[in-house]
Length: 324
Image (cartoon, rainbow, N blue to C red; front, side):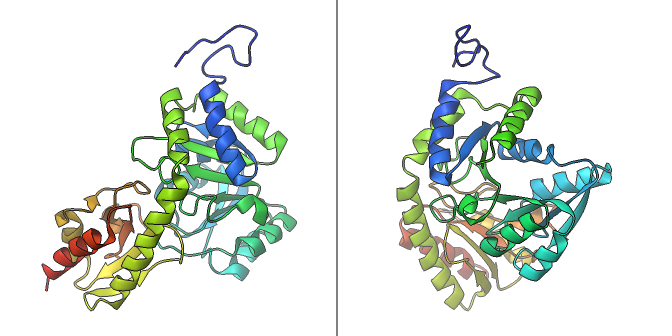
C-alpha cells in the first residue's frame, strides 16, 4: 500500500511500480502468453493503446463493441486525431479490406453486446500484412477460452473488472503484448498519464484469477443451459449465445417496454450494467443512449453467474410470465 518505496530498488515511487502490480501482471501474462501491464481501468488501458496510434492514421473497429471504446474512438475522430472505419467484425472479407492502410485493427470477439465472433486467426495475419497492429479485447472470452496472441494479435486488452477478478469489487484494466518496445511505450504512457491501478485492486484481481477456471466453468454451464431453454421459449423472440463464455443476449416477446420491466423486476438476477461476476446481472442495452441503432431495442444482455441454474430459470420464467 506504500506510495514511496525503497530508493535504489525496483521502484522508488508508487506511480512507477508496485510489487503487487507485478504479481497480477505475471499471472495474467502467463495466462495470455505475453507481458502484462495493469491500468486503473479498462478504458485507461484502451486510452494508453490508442495514444500510440499516429495522428490522422486509420483505426478499424467493430460496429458493435463496448460503448466506451467506440465513443472514445469517435471522439478522437471528431478532433481530427484518427480516421475511424467501422466494420462488421464477423464479416472477414470486409474487415480485411478495411485494414488496407490502417494503423490499428481493434477486435472484440465476442462483441459487446451483439456477441458476434471474429475469425481472429484469419484477420489478424491479414491485418499485419497490410501494416496494421492488431489489438483484441478479450474481456468476454478470457485467456481460458481464447488466446489472441497465439492467433496473431499484437495486443490483448482486458477490463479486469469483469471475469478476471470476478466478484464485482474491482475497477481495473490490463494490456498484454509480446512486443518489448510497445510494452515500454505503454508503460511510459501509464506513468505519464497516472493511469495506475491501486495495490488493493490488483491484489483482489490476483485473488480472483485463482478461481477463474472454476467460476468460468460453472457460469458457462449455466449459460449454455439457460440459452437452450430461452431459445425454446415461446416468450422469447430471439436468443443468442456464441457457444462459450457467460454472456447471453435475448429479446422477449413484447419489445423494449417488456424487456425493461423484466430486468427491473427480477429477484435473483440483479439489474445492473456490469458483468462477469459470480452473481447474474442483466440490463436492456439500448437504455444507454450511446448504443448504436443497429442493436435491437429490446435486447437484454444477460451475464450469467454461478447460482443454481434452476433458481435462475425460475426467476426468468416468473418475470416472463408476468407479461403474458
